Amino acid sequence: MADQLILSSPLLDYVRDFSLREDDVLRELREETAGLPGGTALQINPEEGQFLALLVRMTGAADVLELGTYTGYSALCMARALPADGHLVTCDITGRWPSIGVPYWKRAGVADREQRVEDAFAVLGELLAERGPASFDLVFIDADKVNYPRYYEQSLELVRPGGLIVVDNTLFFGQVADPAFTDANTEGVRALNALLRDDERVEVSMLTVADGVTLARRKGA
Ligand code: CA
Image: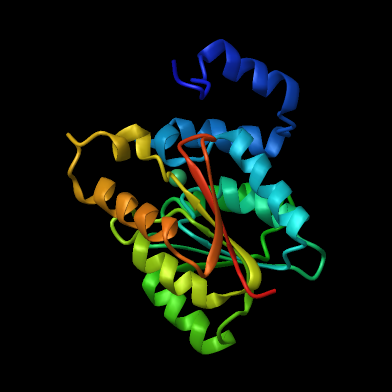
Protein backbone atom coordinates (compact mmCIF):
# COMPACT_ATOMS: atom_id res chain seq x y z
CA MET A 1 0.00 0.00 0.00
CA ALA A 2 1.23 3.45 -0.84
CA ASP A 3 1.95 5.64 2.14
CA GLN A 4 0.80 8.74 0.29
CA LEU A 5 -2.82 9.76 0.28
CA ILE A 6 -4.50 9.74 -3.07
CA LEU A 7 -6.87 12.65 -2.90
CA SER A 8 -10.39 11.49 -3.70
CA SER A 9 -13.03 13.98 -4.73
CA PRO A 10 -14.80 13.88 -1.34
CA LEU A 11 -11.50 14.43 0.41
CA LEU A 12 -10.61 17.36 -1.83
CA ASP A 13 -14.05 18.83 -1.10
CA TYR A 14 -13.32 18.39 2.58
CA VAL A 15 -9.96 20.17 2.23
CA ARG A 16 -11.68 23.04 0.50
CA ASP A 17 -14.58 23.16 2.98
CA PHE A 18 -12.23 23.37 5.92
CA SER A 19 -9.37 25.49 4.65
CA LEU A 20 -10.19 27.45 1.55
CA ARG A 21 -10.73 31.17 2.07
CA GLU A 22 -11.23 32.12 -1.53
CA ASP A 23 -13.15 35.38 -1.81
CA ASP A 24 -15.55 36.52 -4.56
CA VAL A 25 -12.86 38.11 -6.76
CA LEU A 26 -10.77 34.98 -6.85
CA ARG A 27 -13.74 32.67 -7.22
CA GLU A 28 -15.18 34.65 -10.11
CA LEU A 29 -11.82 34.76 -11.89
CA ARG A 30 -11.42 31.02 -11.39
CA GLU A 31 -14.91 30.35 -12.70
CA GLU A 32 -14.40 32.53 -15.77
CA THR A 33 -11.06 30.83 -16.44
CA ALA A 34 -12.56 27.36 -16.06
CA GLY A 35 -14.74 28.13 -19.08
CA LEU A 36 -11.74 28.73 -21.34
CA PRO A 37 -10.18 26.00 -23.49
CA GLY A 38 -7.77 24.13 -21.21
CA GLY A 39 -8.74 26.47 -18.41
CA THR A 40 -8.97 24.01 -15.57
CA ALA A 41 -5.65 22.35 -16.48
CA LEU A 42 -3.72 25.59 -16.86
CA GLN A 43 -5.06 27.38 -13.83
CA ILE A 44 -3.67 26.54 -10.42
CA ASN A 45 -6.01 25.04 -7.84
CA PRO A 46 -7.53 27.49 -5.38
CA GLU A 47 -5.86 25.82 -2.41
CA GLU A 48 -2.53 26.14 -4.21
CA GLY A 49 -3.19 29.86 -4.72
CA GLN A 50 -3.83 30.22 -1.02
CA PHE A 51 -0.62 28.31 -0.33
CA LEU A 52 1.35 30.65 -2.60
CA ALA A 53 -0.05 33.65 -0.76
CA LEU A 54 0.96 32.10 2.54
CA LEU A 55 4.47 31.43 1.20
CA VAL A 56 4.81 35.08 0.19
CA ARG A 57 3.80 36.17 3.67
CA MET A 58 5.89 33.55 5.48
CA THR A 59 9.03 34.48 3.59
CA GLY A 60 8.33 38.19 3.86
CA ALA A 61 8.85 38.44 0.12
CA ALA A 62 8.59 41.95 -1.29
CA ASP A 63 9.84 41.27 -4.81
CA VAL A 64 8.17 38.39 -6.59
CA LEU A 65 8.56 37.14 -10.14
CA GLU A 66 6.12 34.82 -11.87
CA LEU A 67 6.85 33.02 -15.13
CA GLY A 68 3.54 32.11 -16.76
CA THR A 69 0.65 34.47 -15.95
CA TYR A 70 -2.20 32.72 -17.76
CA THR A 71 -5.31 34.54 -16.48
CA GLY A 72 -3.55 35.72 -13.38
CA TYR A 73 -5.12 33.77 -10.54
CA SER A 74 -1.76 33.00 -8.93
CA ALA A 75 -0.53 36.54 -9.59
CA LEU A 76 -3.59 37.88 -7.80
CA CYS A 77 -3.03 35.57 -4.84
CA MET A 78 0.62 36.56 -4.51
CA ALA A 79 0.13 40.27 -5.20
CA ARG A 80 -2.40 40.57 -2.40
CA ALA A 81 0.03 38.93 0.00
CA LEU A 82 2.79 41.45 -0.68
CA PRO A 83 3.63 44.30 1.68
CA ALA A 84 2.50 47.79 0.60
CA ASP A 85 5.86 48.51 -1.02
CA GLY A 86 6.01 45.05 -2.62
CA HIS A 87 6.34 44.42 -6.30
CA LEU A 88 5.26 41.59 -8.57
CA VAL A 89 6.44 41.00 -12.11
CA THR A 90 4.50 38.44 -14.09
CA CYS A 91 4.99 37.46 -17.71
CA ASP A 92 3.31 35.45 -20.40
CA ILE A 93 4.04 34.94 -24.08
CA THR A 94 0.60 36.28 -24.95
CA GLY A 95 -1.47 39.12 -23.56
CA ARG A 96 -4.68 37.31 -24.43
CA TRP A 97 -5.08 35.34 -21.20
CA PRO A 98 -3.66 37.90 -18.74
CA SER A 99 -6.10 40.51 -20.12
CA ILE A 100 -8.93 38.38 -18.72
CA GLY A 101 -7.44 38.76 -15.25
CA VAL A 102 -6.90 42.52 -15.39
CA PRO A 103 -10.45 43.53 -14.31
CA TYR A 104 -10.15 41.18 -11.34
CA TRP A 105 -6.73 42.58 -10.43
CA LYS A 106 -8.28 46.05 -10.55
CA ARG A 107 -11.15 45.02 -8.31
CA ALA A 108 -8.65 43.59 -5.85
CA GLY A 109 -6.58 46.78 -5.93
CA VAL A 110 -3.42 45.16 -7.26
CA ALA A 111 -3.54 46.22 -10.89
CA ASP A 112 -0.30 48.16 -10.46
CA ARG A 113 1.70 44.94 -10.54
CA GLU A 114 3.91 44.70 -13.57
CA GLN A 115 2.83 42.56 -16.46
CA ARG A 116 5.13 41.80 -19.37
CA VAL A 117 3.98 40.18 -22.56
CA GLU A 118 7.15 38.39 -23.55
CA ASP A 119 8.58 34.96 -23.33
CA ALA A 120 10.09 34.05 -20.02
CA PHE A 121 13.69 33.98 -21.32
CA ALA A 122 13.41 37.55 -22.54
CA VAL A 123 11.98 38.67 -19.21
CA LEU A 124 14.59 36.81 -17.17
CA GLY A 125 17.35 38.40 -19.26
CA GLU A 126 15.83 41.87 -18.92
CA LEU A 127 15.39 41.58 -15.19
CA LEU A 128 18.97 40.42 -14.74
CA ALA A 129 20.14 43.46 -16.72
CA GLU A 130 17.72 45.91 -15.04
CA ARG A 131 17.97 44.78 -11.46
CA GLY A 132 20.99 42.52 -11.31
CA PRO A 133 21.40 39.10 -9.70
CA ALA A 134 19.79 38.25 -6.34
CA SER A 135 17.14 40.94 -6.80
CA PHE A 136 14.04 38.83 -6.11
CA ASP A 137 12.79 37.16 -2.95
CA LEU A 138 10.57 34.60 -4.59
CA VAL A 139 10.15 33.22 -8.11
CA PHE A 140 7.16 31.12 -9.15
CA ILE A 141 7.90 29.05 -12.25
CA ASP A 142 4.78 27.94 -14.13
CA ALA A 143 5.59 28.56 -17.79
CA ASP A 144 6.12 25.97 -20.56
CA LYS A 145 7.55 22.75 -19.19
CA VAL A 146 10.05 22.09 -22.00
CA ASN A 147 12.28 24.88 -20.72
CA TYR A 148 11.91 24.25 -17.01
CA PRO A 149 15.61 23.47 -16.38
CA ARG A 150 16.73 26.67 -18.08
CA TYR A 151 14.09 28.79 -16.34
CA TYR A 152 15.25 27.34 -13.06
CA GLU A 153 18.91 28.17 -13.72
CA GLN A 154 18.14 31.78 -14.54
CA SER A 155 15.70 32.10 -11.66
CA LEU A 156 18.39 30.87 -9.30
CA GLU A 157 20.55 33.74 -10.44
CA LEU A 158 17.73 36.23 -9.89
CA VAL A 159 16.65 35.03 -6.47
CA ARG A 160 18.60 36.22 -3.44
CA PRO A 161 20.39 33.83 -1.10
CA GLY A 162 17.70 32.63 1.30
CA GLY A 163 15.06 33.34 -1.34
CA LEU A 164 12.61 30.79 -2.63
CA ILE A 165 11.91 29.26 -6.01
CA VAL A 166 8.51 27.59 -6.31
CA VAL A 167 7.96 25.31 -9.29
CA ASP A 168 4.51 24.16 -10.36
CA ASN A 169 3.50 20.88 -12.01
CA THR A 170 6.58 18.95 -10.94
CA LEU A 171 4.59 15.69 -10.97
CA PHE A 172 3.03 16.63 -14.32
CA PHE A 173 -0.22 14.65 -14.06
CA GLY A 174 1.79 11.70 -12.76
CA GLN A 175 3.48 11.33 -16.13
CA VAL A 176 6.98 11.88 -14.69
CA ALA A 177 6.81 8.42 -13.11
CA ASP A 178 5.37 6.67 -16.16
CA PRO A 179 8.01 5.63 -18.72
CA ALA A 180 5.33 5.52 -21.43
CA PHE A 181 5.43 9.31 -21.55
CA THR A 182 8.40 10.63 -23.47
CA ASP A 183 7.00 13.91 -24.80
CA ALA A 184 9.04 17.08 -24.51
CA ASN A 185 6.98 18.56 -21.68
CA THR A 186 7.23 15.51 -19.47
CA GLU A 187 10.96 15.23 -20.24
CA GLY A 188 11.41 18.90 -19.36
CA VAL A 189 9.84 18.39 -15.95
CA ARG A 190 11.84 15.21 -15.40
CA ALA A 191 15.07 17.01 -16.28
CA LEU A 192 14.34 19.73 -13.75
CA ASN A 193 13.45 17.19 -11.06
CA ALA A 194 16.75 15.38 -11.69
CA LEU A 195 18.64 18.65 -11.56
CA LEU A 196 16.99 19.64 -8.28
CA ARG A 197 17.63 16.30 -6.63
CA ASP A 198 21.39 16.77 -6.85
CA ASP A 199 21.62 20.55 -6.69
CA GLU A 200 23.71 21.55 -3.68
CA ARG A 201 22.91 25.21 -4.22
CA VAL A 202 19.41 24.77 -2.83
CA GLU A 203 17.40 23.05 -0.13
CA VAL A 204 14.50 21.20 -1.66
CA SER A 205 11.08 19.90 -0.80
CA MET A 206 8.84 18.28 -3.39
CA LEU A 207 5.24 18.51 -2.27
CA THR A 208 2.47 16.25 -3.50
CA VAL A 209 0.12 19.21 -3.50
CA ALA A 210 -2.05 19.84 -6.55
CA ASP A 211 0.01 18.66 -9.56
CA GLY A 212 3.25 18.62 -7.57
CA VAL A 213 4.86 21.76 -6.18
CA THR A 214 8.59 21.88 -5.52
CA LEU A 215 10.14 24.40 -3.16
CA ALA A 216 13.82 25.21 -3.63
CA ARG A 217 15.43 27.62 -1.18
CA ARG A 218 18.65 29.17 -2.33
CA LYS A 219 21.37 28.52 0.22
CA GLY A 220 23.71 31.17 1.49
CA ALA A 221 21.66 33.21 3.93
CA1 CA B 1 0.62 25.16 -13.59
